[in-house]
Amino acid sequence: MDKTRKLEKRWFKYKRKKIVSILLTSSILTMLISSSYYLFKSEKLNLERLKTFFLSSSTEVKNNISDNVELKPSSLITKKIEDTNQTLLDLNNSLIVPFIIEKGSEISLEPVIPIIDMDKEESKRTYIKKKKVYHKKNIEHRVQAKKSNYLTQKELSRITPSKGMVRDTTKLKKIQLSSSSINYMETMKKKFLKNKNPRDALLLAKAFYKRKLYKKAEKWSFSANKIDKNLEESWVIFAKSKAKLGKKDEAIKILWMYYKRNKSRKIKELIQNIKKGRI
Amino acid sequence: MSNRFANLKNIFIDTVDKDNYVDLELATYSYKVLESSLDKPLKMLLIYGKPGTGKSMLLNKLYHNLKENREIFYFDAPILSEKEFLRYIFESISSKKIPKNLKVNFDGLLKHCKGLKGKREIVFLLDECQLYSESLMEKIRLLSDTRVIKFVITLHKTDNEEIIAKEHFKTRIWEVIEMKNADEYDLELYITKKMVKKGFMEISNMLRKKDFKYIHSHTHGNFRETNKYLYTIFDLYEYYDEVEPHKLSNKKFSKKILEMAAIRLGYIHG
Image (spheres, rainbow over the protein chains, first blue to last red):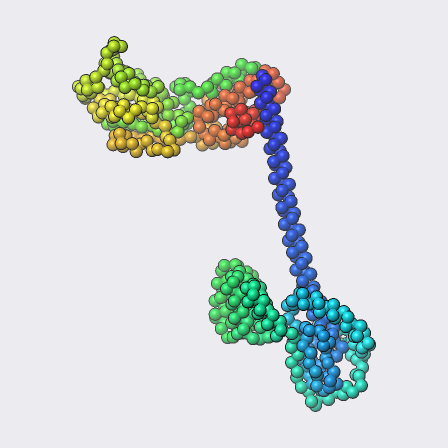
């Protein structure tokens, strides 16, 4: 009888242990699930923040340009300049390489590659803030740029040409305004050689692709692929560069190989686009 | 009321008794193979398997079923002394008692057996043969060569050695029957049949699929282990039925008692 009572006590102990372990396991599981959820969410937030940052920096550039330049919906921005020695953009804004604009020249701006050295950028931003005081003096001559649209009639009317700014339409000259991408490329190349990070190679490939330097884009995306075979974007750039270089079959073959492995919808669409000659 | 569980637990006391034999699919098949093999001109038959898989039970059933029809002798416990073994063999064959001070001469026994060739066929059922010495096994081999004596032996299957591969078995055993642990379905049948056979249908109906599953998870379908477990379960049932009957349900089998029995036998640690 006593033996059974002792056994019952042992059973209670066993049951308690079991319940505790179940509770512990379930709470650990809940914690794991919730933490992974929040991690995922914060990761998403970071991405969003990064996106907004890139967007805002590009808007900033546009804002700087806007007082003298008419923005077109396309990325190419042209404006006839009347004053000979007027700098188009803020000289200290390193995202845009300063050019001395000749009288009557036409300016074309290439889109700024939204890849930025964060540390460098931070210091530049503070510098820009200081310079804003200087900008305020000329603010009445400036017009807020509309996103991806022409300026309205009203807005255009506010642009008052400064003294000496004479519009000479006969001597229109196209000037290529390039960004600091050359420096950027060099920095990225160095960075890549140092770290061997496939993302750096991919960024370089993207930059070259945007500049229509498809050979280089192909080379750098290939470098990224060699290091990380699952970097989809680099496969996309690689194939697109191939397609641009006239090697469509090769591009499709490469993309098919990748598609078989990863079943990516984006890749499938790209194959279709290359086949239809959209790229 | 308490007698009910006391009687019930007793049916799970591990005994090699033909009345406790439960017809299961594998056991029935093995029995048929064994029975039919006895009619074939085989010298030796081997039943092997892990302890508690029903080898002895099978041998016992065979003995009780055939003892009326043929010359069959059952050594349920191994006779380890060679002298005693030969004496039992001779006494079984000749139906004569040998005085204690006399010893059976093996060559004489062989000659005696050879003299019976074509006239008689005697079957000896030897249990737990892994306990016999090498030299005794050799003598068994030689006796089986006379084709007068046929041996049915049981062996424990061990993980480390493959006994069948041993020299003295390799050339002679013509029929090998392996006994295995029961699966969940067979174990359920075994427990239910055993309880119903003894008139405990009501209690057997209380056992649900998950209870059988739980029992199987601890005993792995080993009959000896299952008997032990069920004995402990009904021992606890007997206690609660007597002392704290309010703790027992008449509809469901108590999971608590199943777990308590498992703790008592060391299957789980409380």
